[in-house]
Length: 191
Image (cartoon, rainbow, N blue to C red; front, side):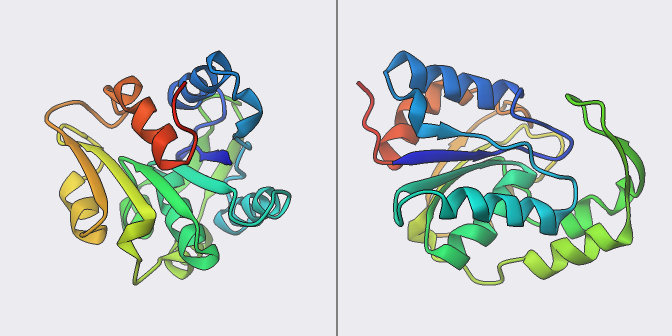
């Protein structure tokens, strides 16, 4: 089993959650069970790269873990490829929520500048999974998320296993507490 971590908008594999998950797996001798590609800013390219990562592994051995925009991508891919996914304060409608960010952007970790365009919005709209299979998901949200409304995620993933933490923020401050549950969900029982 491999956990394929998909970072959020303007983020990178160097993000706090990606590094904490990687370190947690390494400390248990499972470092080779973690992958986190640098996702391109274009949605179609991010999906294509992630599909290559999935295809490089044996069928049925990947659990996706997606944070924010990565959760949106994880949902699309989980439905398309019948995979399980852990969603961390996931974006439910980036085509709506990121429209106010149109214009020049810069990745917070790599420094890469790019233009967020209506083309991005159209690609996110095309990737939106209108129906989901709730049994595929572990949803972890904090009610204090200042960026996304956690209630939208609870509605979208109704019936999924959900962990709702009072307070917190968009960075998912309680993330380290959930690492054992994430590994269990992924079929990598904590050692």
